[in-house]
Length: 92
Figure: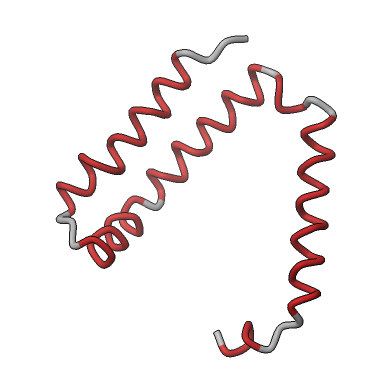
């Protein structure tokens, strides 16, 4: 953390702008419009949520004092259901 405090803010902003421009260029070529791309991204998101479930549960307990059951039902399970619904309603 101490290393981050000594970073050059201009460098950090420049890095962010470079990353943003890269994302915009990718978006502009319409690669994100295909059904296959969107489906794959939703599946990756779902996998990432599942793979990091324990981290989410720990954070929700630490920040909001939610039990693991409450956190899963109100946050993680809800999100996974939303992703499933997005997949079901995805149009080609």
